Length: 618
Image 1 (cartoon, rainbow, N blue to C red):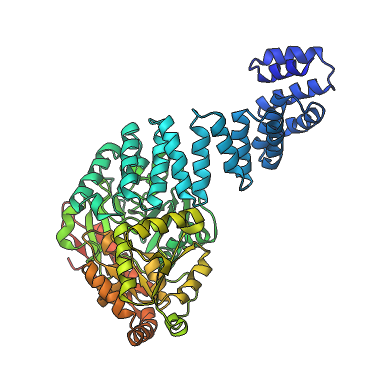
Image 2: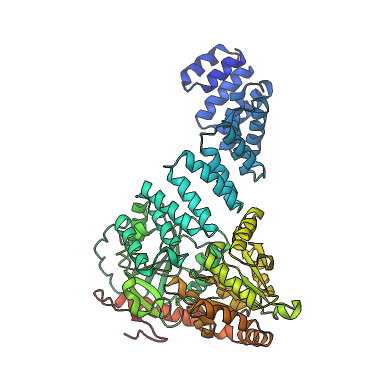
């Protein structure tokens, strides 16, 4: 058998021809080993095939389909180094085969190699009508925070495949991360037009619309949420019959993010503080999660359930637990299970914590808010009935021991403003406002920390873009995301924190306050735009809430005055630990009163229900 004959057989999809060829070959010959290995690989017996491939490749390195088949077996076994070596050998002998460069790029990416994109770019150059190498390169670049390069490749891919919704969704994500929200919104609407049944894509659009006031008015946001529900949330099933009274209220919490650090500061302390004699709690993980934060949640609840991905099976799992109340913690956030909730697996359902607007879903009965996030007079903006907690709608406990530090201006001789919010929140309006702050405080600097700044190309893009807006970028440091411990240590270098708008910070605001760093926020006209105001009110600092941009700039400048800064930081460090925002026990008791109130409320009423420090007020 010649090498060409072997190559043809390896490419042949008819197993009968391979078996016929094997019958004519010496079993131990390299050609027979190659065909035996390929038969095993096709039968998904890669572990048995691998040693045979190794022997055959050593004897017949010039047979390129053999190298390809052996590399596929390595990939199936997770042996990416081996696959990479085989495709390296392939392209060395045949440098003009685009598929080999594509596979080489993917193997390099699996190994975390910097040259993965170069291989994918080579594949794209050799096959200029194929969008796949461009899309794969964009994905890798996005993971590395090289957002401009990722967008450039997706531009080219979309030009080749304009009706591929996945490419539009991917570009929307990268545009959003660069705070290019008009373009991201356009991409999302186009993608949704191509796959209108994609509920997750529709949710992504709803998230996107909150980043910039110019994208949608509060009334338009409400309409968009209702339209999503009309398309993706089936009419709610009949309300389930109430179970016989029992000694403990049976409450479920549903989230895709039990393993995320932000929830460790907001949710886990509440779960740990629940009165276990009165509440039986179950954590429903919408998707598999692991890690120390997830372990804390497991330890804090009575039961942990990993929900199946299939909604029918997940519905059966929750409904079978006969809950009194199911609390959804995601809303339209990524990984949500709103289509499942629309089928009403629990008698009473509420939304809380990780969403900042109505869900629009008729089967979700309640939204847990507060008088600032969700004022009573705006209840018509929500399809849910409002439960108003007495302070902020969540409480915070630092994930580690923190110690406020002196103002760094005392050491540095200049004021350092700072923000650790993701760059998607930093719209042009925010950048211009922060430029005004810097000009109002001579010599001041601004330190920004976000995952997007992990690539020099992204930082260069932002600097150039902001410079065109008149922002003094030479006074701004763009720092990459760091581990949680280092992030908290970074607050020692910030004098005053600046909250973005209208998509205000949440945990980042709480983190700053925990370190004794004053925070300036702008109160807006929608729920997420009031988050900073609600948190500062619960922290006992409503005076740091500005009604408009002019007041925001003036407030930041006033706090930066040396004597004011020292006094405010000292007072904050002394007060914050006893504030309502940090009083998890007080918050949990109020939440528990709210849970009982929601269970016992008149289902026909739409009036907001306010919970006081001790009992529901109506």
